[in-house]
Length: 354
Image (cartoon, rainbow, N blue to C red; front, side, top):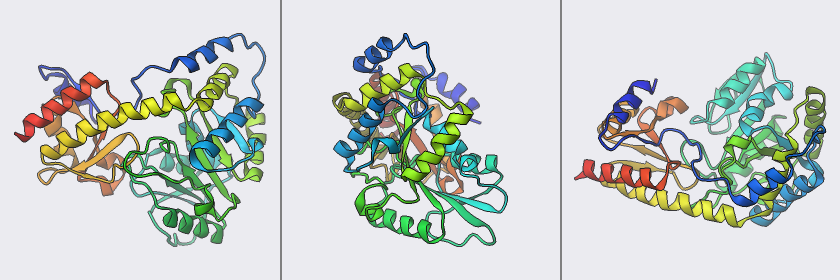
């Protein structure tokens, strides 16, 4: 659906500034590439549970950076968090007569995962009754894609209590948790959110954004040890194994905080440029306190009108209704473009506002 707008944006004299997709463009840090290369001679099958060093690195990162304590045995590497999110309802045995709840404005994969399992996806941001179906899985996403919204500890704690009351698994997509700018994000596994117990909880983490490893398909899930053990057994029998060189690269990435700080600083600088330019051009920015996107609306446009107006300036963005009907008046602008393209986009926005 974006194809004609891409054509329009490409026709701009200064070329397209593609801010429509959140795919990293900055280099993979050397410490990670070196670890990948050193592990290249890996002729045997990789450990389904991940190496001990990888699981310790993941647990260490959570403790060091996010105040979360998990045992290494409660960590399971996954072949990209998108794939895990899509298949989790199936892995949990969801099916006909079950409901999977996800945020009203959401990454489409939550809905697709429910449909793959034969369950009914339900878009809701709060506690609700879904009718005759049993709620089996509840997704929360903080920081949010697409809005950059951060859920406060009280809201997370309320969602945890609700999930436990209705016997559902609460799965938290926390893939942007290291990319907070004006507001700190709390993990659902933090004691302030879960009352000190991980029972019934899963949290999903990706290295795609933190460490520019989208091409490596590197992530992990942790939380309730009993649930992780069940998922591990399924992974073993289904052959769902993260390649050994990728595990080595993940270990290096999780052990090293400096490259993540530097990457967050790059995104912060791009964010500041685009926020200022959008506001000057008459756009209102909502939430957007964390993550890789600016969520914005303009009084003169619906989401597709905004996409069209920006495309004429050579800037390609995503329409808000890609993420649900509640996004019908918004656009999502990604921070994942080179510094040169972001500066160019900011200049074009400034010209629109003059």
